[in-house]
Figure 1: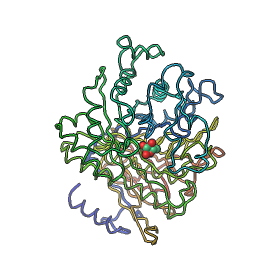
Figure 2: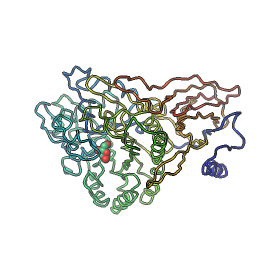
Figure 3: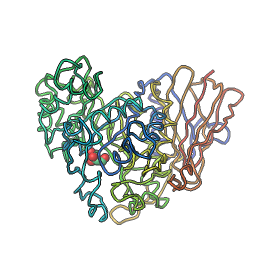
Length: 550
Ligand code: AHR
């Protein structure tokens, strides 16, 4: 984009442009999307569409693992409905076994005959973090006392069934490098070579698992050891020094910052490269965690219009976080060898009291969470040159999940629908795209004062794959549609179709009683005679446009 144009757009946006644009968009259009095909950003890694599974609440037991003898339809103990749905979102990697749980997990506990595996207190059993009194009083169950029925082999089975790559998180806080190297050997060494690879083969898994993605701890600034960034850099170097590859390229994910903590990013990388810039070759990605939280009373299903806007606005902070950390990473890594893995993101509301008590942080997301998913995924795509992986927290039954399940009930949340719609971007070339639209305004409370706030009225991303252009966008305006002129660098549009997730009620969601209440619908789109397009984005919507270019 030329500097003049960039300045114009920036000032239009800064002014909260309500009516602007010269030359005016097509008759009646009040917003505009310019897709700049000649400004490629990078290939959209399928790993931006990754997932996260932790032994927390109802995620593993019974969200994923129901057991082979369950009346719940399953494949070797893994919930069949989950497998079928996860395949539809084309997962990149699945991260496991945590989260905070990972730094308390001994992988040895999760192998061998299932009935002989040890029981342990789950990391989350005694947590006081955002839990209800009912949860605190929970006495038993696999959510509290980890039976280790779902271990390495079972997790690999989940990956195989869903066509996902495994991403393991090594325990840095409570185990040593040797335990990590043994896990790697169990997973990746060819059968017949070592005692551990023979143990794997004896469990029916002759072929190595070839696990390529390894996280070195998790949130080492907090539950993963309360370390200083310098201390963690030393741990990272020890865990990643002279690691056998067994012919597999190992991609190490380093614990990255908590939200805006650029101090962690700066100090970790600075300490790491004290040993030489070659250390950077060992860092595939730096994991950034950002939860936009909740608003009001924290109820996932009840919120005012203002709370709807406030949370979507807060989720949009992810863009400045990506940019800030990227800039700081450049101080120690001017060639930007190290990319970002946003390996925990999402909203985080209070647990729905109608779900079983042990299903910590479980709730069905609403249309609001769907827009938050769209905001995040579009941001990662606009920064496809920086973000190599992203994983919402988590896959099922907790926090920003794609599914809710309880015994034989299973429902896809609105987040699932966004992931399925957006999967069309995977592997395509992200291209610079400018959105200009009237901004949305709302009232928020800051330090007990009510003040007006505003943010963009339409935002998204675009990617191109041959003649197919995919544009995805969120319209956060709860009431107003956006007539939008779409320009593709002067290229003509041969045909177009749309898929839209929206509802007249901004609280719309799916539930066990009404599992299909909120689903996307396909729309026919009329392309103008000259191959032009003015599209009306519905209020409170997530939209995917698929255009075939002439
Ligand atoms: O996703 C839930 C928890 O949030 C994870 O265990 C931890 O890494 C983060 O604080």
